Every structure is written in C-alpha cells, then in structure tokens.
Length: 284
Image 1: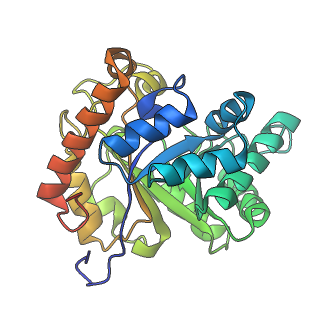
Image 2: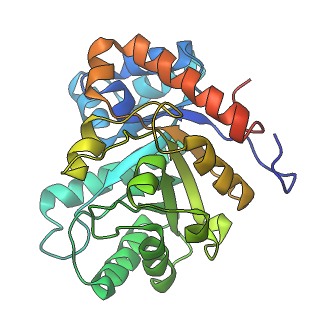
C-alpha cells in the first residue's frame, strides 16, 4: 500500500476492544474478528486479565491468535497518571499490565487518556514521567472533549512540551467531532506524531453528558453526522501514516443485537468509508 508520499506501510484494520463489548471471551473475540475481515483486535487490560482468570496463559493467547492468523494490534487503556495521588496501587498494576501486553503481543504503542482536569504544567510533567516508564513503547495520548486534554491542540501542546519522542497522539472520529476539530486544527501538528486513528461516527445531537454518549452510543463509520469520510481525508492529506486504524464503535445496542452482527456491520461501514476517503488502506 502507498500513501501520497509513496511509502505507507500495511496499516492493520483493527476491531477495537469495546466494539465487541466487555463480556466476550478472548477466543471468541479473536474468532469473530478473523472471520469478519479484520487484521487485528484491540485488547484492554481488563480483557487480558479476564483471559488469565479463565485459565489462559500468555502462550495460549499467542497460539489462538496464530491459529486464526490475526494479531493484537491495539493495547489500552492507561488512565489516572496525572498526579501522585491518582497513581494508586491498582492504577500502577494496570499500567504495568498494559506494558506487558504490548511487549507480549508486539504492539509498539499504548492508548492513554487523562480524565482528571489538572493544570497543564502538571499534565506535561506527568506525561513525561509516563513516557519514561514506558521506555521503548509509544504512549498514544487521546484527546477527549470531556477530559483534562480536551482537544487536539491541547494534546499536542503537552506531548511536545514533555520533550519525549515516544509521546504521540491518537485521533478518534467521535472525539474529533464532539470537540469541533477541523483541518485547521491539525495543520501545525507533525504527521509522524499521530500514531493511531480510530473510526466511528456520532449522532446529530450530542448527549448532555458527553462521556455517557462516548461509552454507550456511537455509530458505525459514515452512518452518522461526524463526517467520517472528511475526517479520514483530512488525516490522509496531512500525511498521517498510522500504525493502526482502529474501528471503535462503542454501542450497547449493537452489542446487544449480536457480536457477529456488530463485526459485520462495522467492517462493511469502515470499508465503505475508506474506499471513498483513503483507498490505499481500505481492506481489499
């Protein structure tokens, strides 16, 4: 595959963890993704811990992935890293789990976000410390309009100011739309500092509580009012070369309808968007 610069590496189309809900087993998650066209799965720390609790070992998980010719391509989600008081023992254990998962599955970046609204200087310091703890792994900071890093400009300010090359950014359609981002928002951000893209769509009218909408009622790419095609085109034209293109359609109703249904629906919707906006990375 090639991008406008002629060198776009294979970008795995990934079904993000929440798209298949929180109850599905690791083997089923892998099977559903593989049988419905995806290159990779997203895995949260909670999914990994659940798999261990169900009796699977790291070796079992690698074997299951290999049997289905699929990979874990997205690991998440580090939160509560902004202050010393937020970094509880539980948070620190989860952070270490995500580091282990990334290394085990060969994923070079970890998704993270900061819900707590604290001074930007503190975020800069804390992000640098998180990047140091991650060592060779990339920390993909995701802006969220209801969070301590509310838009793309804020995300880039703290990533740049922390002075670590492994502080990079994630762009998600839902957050992009709800934070009212445009092509102007990205023009001064180096394309090579955007590590991952997540596709979905939004309703016309936002919820009063944006986080509730984000965690329960997203739409498939191109099926709402967020202009997923336009979002993808902006990133492509900016020269973004993502490690992963995730499909993160967090939808209670879709999961309740059935996981096979959810996988087929989001795959087909994603392909339609990418065929129009970014054919170089669209699944064939």
